Length: 241
Image (tube, rainbow, N blue to C red; front, top):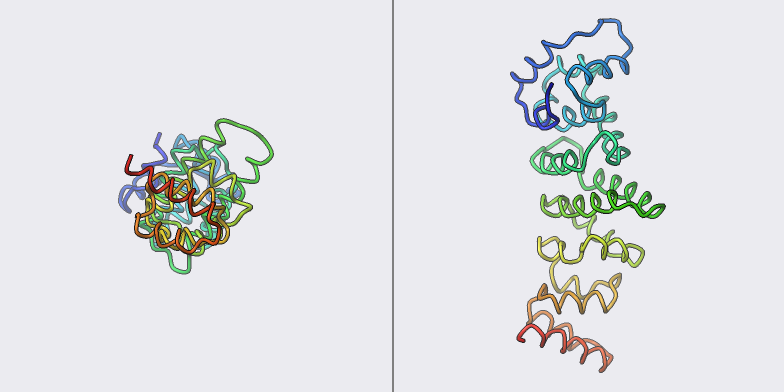
């Protein structure tokens, strides 16, 4: 029995040793082969695909790719990405997903934009959240969004896509505005000037001390509404209380 983390982080020698101890028929159907390998290792198939597919050593291990029934790494990547995008805490646990985010932050894969892959998964996850109120799903979603920012996987394009009015509810659910600012994914002034954010969201960021006072003061001076300037001044003034 092997853990998901073992496959995700194992070196070449360890992986070759692991697979040398497995047994499958040479002419076995590829899907059945992966089912049997996963059972022998004590894992589910999506864990097998993602644990090995996101391991930075595997692209250079043809023997492991063949053992999984893939003729080249790109085929493994396609299966890996499908499992990562579509498995929502069924075979892949939230801990598995968080480990994947940490691993890919250190994994340079030619031609891969991790933020695109991450965004596709998040979009799928959010579509399920909109259909049902599930505490497990909500808890996992919050941890995933935090892991994305903690591991610097939120590209400027990713952040820009998140800062639109239609994502306001999800941003609030995951405390995403604070994560963006705390992890430096967006400059404070750019955050305040973003047209996709409501004034309430911007004022809360000022109130929480996430915006440097000089930056907040510069933004407040540009506001047309006297009432809004006063409300922002109150939020800024609360920091000294």
